[in-house]
Image (tube, rainbow, N blue to C red; front, side, top):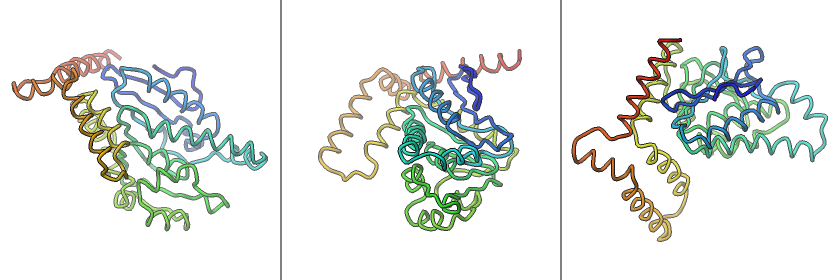
Amino acid sequence: MQNQNFNYISTAIDARGVAQLVLNRPEVHNAFDDNMIQELIQALDLFATNPQVRVLLLRSSGKNFSAGADLGWMRSMADKNYAENLQDAGELARLMQKLDNFPAPTLAIVQGAAFGGAVGLVACCDIAIASDKASFCLSEVKIGLIPAVISPYVVRAIGERASRRYFLTAERFFAAEALHLGLLHQLVSEDELHGVSDAMVQTLLANSPAAVKAAKDLIFTVANQPTTQALIDETSRRIAQIRVSGEGQEGLSAFLQKRTPAWQQRQHAADTQDTDNKGQA
């Protein structure tokens, strides 16, 4: 899938099953409005239902990840009534939920500034790698607003204590602090950003596709839940089910026989095809 007549984003998927979702409004620092939100939702829906997709990369063009809400969009919201604002906010909430619940692993690659709602996008991704010069800001209270729609994801990522500071102060904080808070997983230099993110993709692709998706769903099931008998029974059911699945059987057999599992063999073939395609471009 490439571009799909999108105006505010670009999309692609390679032979390995690596999908790319790119914020593509560098002239306004990738600020988003209702049009970009709809395009992102549409792209996520297309990728989520594509069985070839094994990893989703979320990144942006230009020197900044995203400046947050577009000024023109904010002006239009100021002119809308409560019902219209509620509907508008609901679409942004739908975007965050779709990204957060995306079935395959998601990787945010962050350079430059990520402000406002862009912090929510980063928090919704499974893994976040950033340039050591990246910066972040939950700036909403500066203009009389609150980071409401993104709050479940940001508070989960950085914790209540840090949220009580940065939601209220709207201070700008930098990559090292974002790493310390848990919003990011890894910092690299700007020059290393592409190489390190591709290495992470290769790490994800080396694993069983079905197991990776099942493991992600498992996290949603067990996170913040009491260890009840019902939860114990559910986790027992899940491991038993995946042990007898096709990839579970293949993985166990490959491990015991000290050979490469089938999905890694397929991945090697896809890597070779992708390299060949790049060489012909």
